[in-house]
Length: 254
Image (cartoon, rainbow, N blue to C red; front, side, top):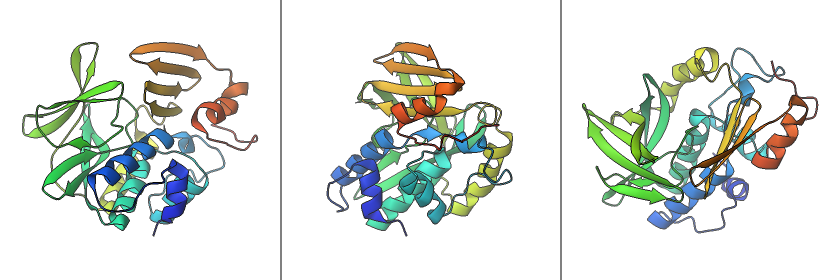
C-alpha cells in the first residue's frame, strides 16, 4: 500500500481523491512535473550492482516519495499505477517499443466510457497529462503537441517537433502484470545501450523540459535550448537546484 498523504505531499497535490477525470488529470500533471526521470541508481557505487532498481511497492515508495528521488519508467509509472489503483481507477499496464526495443512501461486508464493513455516516465518529450485515446486527434499540452495514430497493427504516440511528427513509442493493448516488467527492468539496468552508459535526469516543465545528460545541462523553453557544461564538482548541486534531488555529499558514481 502507498501512503497517499505522503505521495500527495511529494507531488504537491491537494485536490480530491474521487475517481474522476479531473482527479486523474491533476494527479498525473502534478506527478509529471514533480518526479523526474532519472537513472542515477545505475551509477551509484554504494548500491547493489546486481539489482540497483527494485520495483515492489515499498521500494518505489521509499525511493520516489520519502527519498524524493526520481526513476525510470518502471518506477515512475509503476508508482502512478499503484496510486491510481488504490484510489479506485481502472488501470491497465502496457509495454511500448521505443525505436527498436520493447522496453517502455505505459498505462491505459478506463474511466466511464472513455480511455486515456497515461505515462510519466519517458525521458524524452513525454506526456504531462493523460491523453484521450482518440486516433488522429491533435492535442496540445503546455509546450508540446501530441497525436495518437494507428500504423502497422500498433498504436503510435507522436510529438510535433519543428513542424514534423516524430514517433515516441508504439504499443499494442496486451495487458501486463507488474511481474512481467522484471526481466525488462533487468535488461534496462544491465544492458541498455544508452541508459547504462549515460547519467540522465530530466523533468518536464510547463514551458518545455530540463535535461541533465551526463555533465550537460539543457534548458528547453518553447522549442529553444540553452546548454551549459556542468563540472563534476557542481553535479550534486545541479541535481538539487533543478530537480530537487538531494544526494549525500559523499555520493560517488562509477
